[in-house]
Length: 466
Image (cartoon, rainbow, N blue to C red; front, side, top):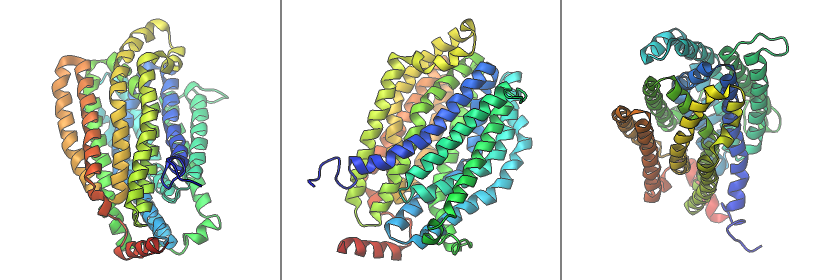
């Protein structure tokens, strides 16, 4: 068959076959968050407003171990490209250890929550909901980290459909439990924001148990030596920390910076906070699926580099970027032309006179979202590419510098009110996208690897003779 853009190696078909399930998989997270906050909006606008700062603080707490565990994807991809299934299993077990070690530490954050949210100086009722939501979410934290390492075992090998099915099942479970526990249906008490947190806990650990069952079925368990490689591998664990640690720190710095920025935004008042939360919630429909494209890009780049085909790694990245542009451009246009399409669900559950001012402000904020969403896609794809090679330290340094600048910019811009704050956030995100595009074009990542040199040499010789 004659090769063209669609059927050539790392062309449209191959990239889409890996990207689409991962977009659906990560998209299920955004749908879950969207419905979660929509139900809470129907129940109480104060509860919905509380989910964003509390959720961001929870993310900040888990993002370092989550980033390290998720970076197992790159190790699995490169070992898989090098045809070393035994090392695939060993790398996965080291990532799971990050979750085991972190689980008891997460619970230590529970008594700190009242002090943290008191410092933020939000309205007393919203503050009380923030504390409750954050404290309960800590019980899901360990499961989130374990699930990231387990998912990486599948995505790093390109088996994205399994992860998609598990994530969609968890989403449906979460949505059903949210309905029952937030509103008090089928004999359950109406628990509001507590019910939303409990639903997250149950659905998170559901994923962990399903992944564990799938990983220990034959022939997967035997092929990847999951029983034989269970032991602690000091050298491999160290490599995971050396390369995955900067990835986790990047998430931590970025999450902490954004949490601080959002906490500052909360001082503009409840209406501004609710509208901003709603705008970010709507944007999650477009943004979170981009994480799937980033994971797919990392996987393809990692696999091709250990096969000695950096040219195919480049091709896969540009193909993924094209899909990301098409996806985000479509949403950007809809945010501007039909913003009410994304607000119908939220408006349905509350009185029109109460929702009207929030809706008007949210429509304005969605124009900012439309302006930066293309750069968000740029950031996701090109970060995925260079991290798939192992260029995690550049990403970390960039995140530290740009986060500091972003905090200062938002603090200064806040003197011009909420709109000034949004201008600063938009400029911050756009700058990040351009920086990572420049790093990718520089090409230094082409010579980087995360796996041991002897495995890379073997894979190159195999690629040369194939």
